[in-house]
Image (tube, rainbow, N blue to C red; front, top):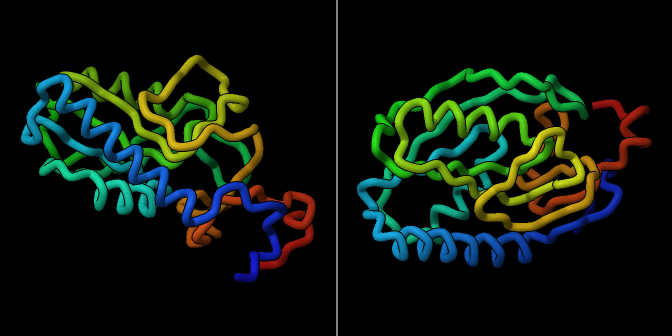
Length: 189
């Protein structure tokens, strides 16, 4: 497979991702079973748009009969930098009062978005709020935050592919790669 010209280096192959996502789905399901949480009390919330490939793969491997829902939170202003103050652009359709919410996110970077979101969902009286992330980037943290379930931990590099984007582009790459930001300076879309 030819790599996109803006790829500096592939970090995670499609096979590595799919294998780890299946393991994560099992880990999360076991967590809920161990804590005697019934399927009907679980709401799995995908954070659009980046979560889509991860969410789909996770859900196909998560053998629980749960409610699916989605939110849109803007935290990037287009480009390479994250915005400090996240904003809810699309809220849940589901009532989460006394429900166990599982947030499915593509990446934990600064921690601002997920910290904000966990507080928001708790204020709506969720019984619990857990986070499963495909990629964790602890070197990018601006505040203290830790996901409950982590697919891969990576260095503090700007990554693209498998839902992760640069300015809404490159989400459809079947792998996760470090972006070549030097080439980006002269790149024409």
